[in-house]
View (cartoon, rainbow, N blue to C red):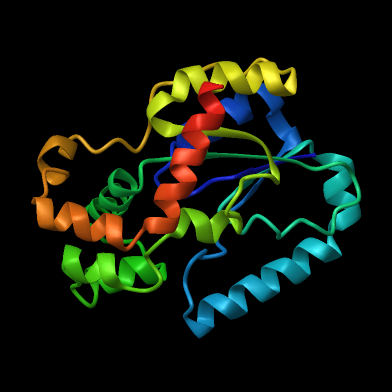
Length: 219
């Protein structure tokens, strides 16, 4: 069973399409866990989602070859079959800015980080310093070493990552045009040096994880 963790704003939507094209109905898409949120409603939602997943264990193992979505890396540890964990990481500064401005563009979103941006009106600086928003990639993956992962791609090197993934897993995914792209990225991501440094300061664990993933990919 391939367990594919889709970290927000790390090419997961584009990758999702590639998985669907190749595996068809053998892919189970698992979204809605509100990863990173410590709101009581989010904790309750994840508890219920895990209980449902365990209840459907036999069906999942019989009907699917891939699970892909927004969930913590250890959610499916209860599965019996051999599990092959994969994911994509992204430069933490770019990922943070991408996520913030994505939420600003999509006012209909109702997940907790969208609410603090659009309902509570958090500025970029306030968003960066919110405890739920820092080191989100490390939160998703629950690792400091990536040892649990058979493959870790790099969003900025998506096409070459797909080639290495195919070689690693013995599959033949094709690359697709990037989706959920911010047409104003050049403008939105042009932040001051102080803001850049603040994002790095609030994402030191993600920075270390990203450098580790880069080294692994380039070996």
